[in-house]
Length: 109
Image (cartoon, one colour):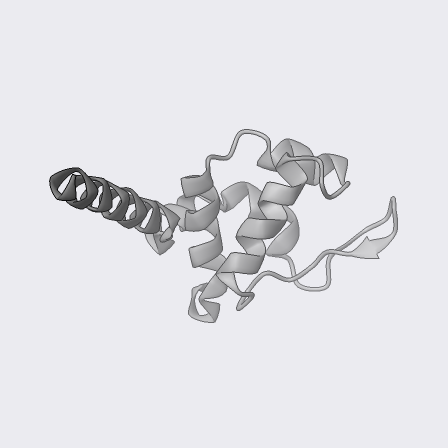
């Protein structure tokens, strides 16, 4: 019984470790993946006329917030058709990479 418990604990630890690795974003990969985002979020002072609102600035934003927002758009928990279509095909790793890129204010062009 103890052997099964130890094996189960080891398996759980391995799964959690791999989830942590997956959750970590790669800034270099994120820079490539964020090119589409830059059309709106990379333009200082840009705002959308319809509906009229200022486009949120992502530079220096917390990575967890960016990931949560992208997932919410993808999963229909936040409503914005353009963002839904942008997030629809992103994997969790894509989101983490994009978030890592934007979270570092030094990456701002």
